[in-house]
Image 1 (cartoon, rainbow, N blue to C red):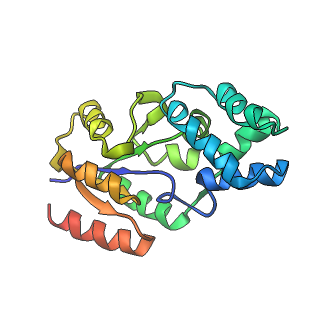
Image 2 (spheres, rainbow, N blue to C red; image 1 turned 60 degrees about the vertical axis):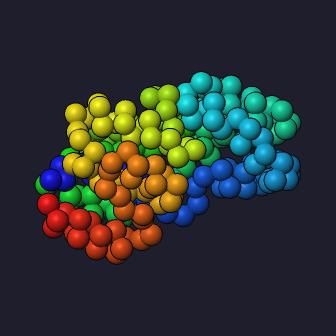
Length: 201
C-alpha cells in the first residue's frame, strides 16, 4: 500500500528559469563573462556545494572570484535561491496531503535549501524534507544511497513509496532501490499517473 509520495523540487514543483543555465545567464548579464565559461566553473564546483562540503561564501569566491565577476554575495545568493512555484502542482500536493505522507527529496544548494524550508507555501505541504547538502548524499550518477537514506529515516519500505522526478536517471535509480516511480512531464500527466498508481493500492 502506498503511504508516502516523494517529490523532487526543481522542474517538478517549479517552472520557469532555474538551475545553472539560469545562474550563468544572470552572471553573464551582470559581468559580460561568457556563459560557457561561467557554466564550466559552476560545474567544477557544484558537487562540493550540493553535498554541503562548501558553503555559499566559498562557492561565491570559487565561482565569481576566479572569474573576476564583480557581484556581491547577496546578489549571488538571490540568483541561486530564485524559483517560481507551479500552482497546479501545489494544488495536487494539497489534495494528496489529506491522504498521504508527502516528502521532498532534492539535490540542492545550501542557500536554496534554507529558502525552501522557510517558504510557508512549501513547508506547510511536506511532512519532511531531505536536501543533498544536509544529508551529504546526492541523486547524481544513478546512486541509490539518497533514496535508501530517506527510506530509513522515514521507516518506510520501498514499495510503500512513489517517487516523482523529471530526470530519467533519477527515476531509474529510485526504481532500482525498489520505489514505484513517476517520470514527471507536466501537471496533467502527474495527476493521471498518481491516480492510476494510488488506485492500485
